[in-house]
Length: 348
Image (cartoon, rainbow, N blue to C red):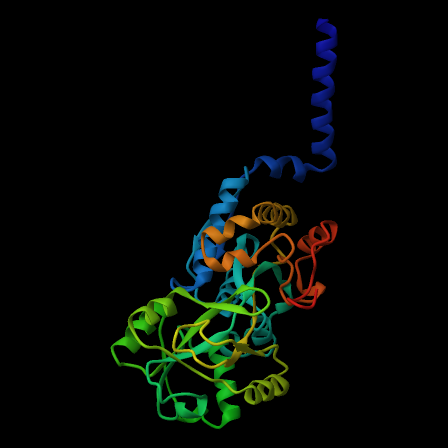
């Protein structure tokens, strides 16, 4: 009996030794703690809440990957950080969108002059579809042509991707040079417009229920709860003209009445993009695999952190509006093995 037990124990030990010799990373990394940073957006955006949620869900469901959440600015700023500090490329999951790689490849904004292969930044899994809207307390400001001479907050980051897109569209409308720009975080922008220091602020919106039910970010909810808010129309013709001239994946969207507030009495034309979490190709494949597995198995929990989270399901997590070569290969392999639809909403 003793000899039998000894034989079994020896067999088990030899198997572990064989595995570690044939593939030492599998054995060692399963035991080694790996810390990643989740970089989102400023407080006041729904993405901030989902970043908190992503770190929390990872920490509760992985024995070896641990996540810290950090408030970020916007994707191109994060890309610039990762390029400047190469070690961070291996340990960062960050908020991105369908415009940011374009800004890098076109050498625009904060990425101007930074030569890099931006195709190495790849999509991981869906957040939502995210229109950007222009908000005012002045009912006389109805379309972007009315912004002449006005003080407008487009972003917290000069030269950021949202800043670039809106200014490009304003140029198509012939008003880019006659607007007074300021740069503030969402909560600061809300306070500034309440105090009459600015005329218009940009706000985030996200898809709440496919295919066309949208809801405002927390900062806009706060503004609408205390002031009569109105929304500035961005005509589709200017959006299309900018997209075609610049080969940028910016699209027009129409938000149905009253989805953004009681005083949104007409459909609102504005700009939209896909929102997703992204990584650099240097993030280890086993880390990507662990994160994707956890998100897939816990997709229904993200709605507890922000209403936007209910868009994420096992069947929507790859609907990032990206081509297959724009998705991290380990994530892509997972999606194909699980038969998760890959593409965009309405284009599965």
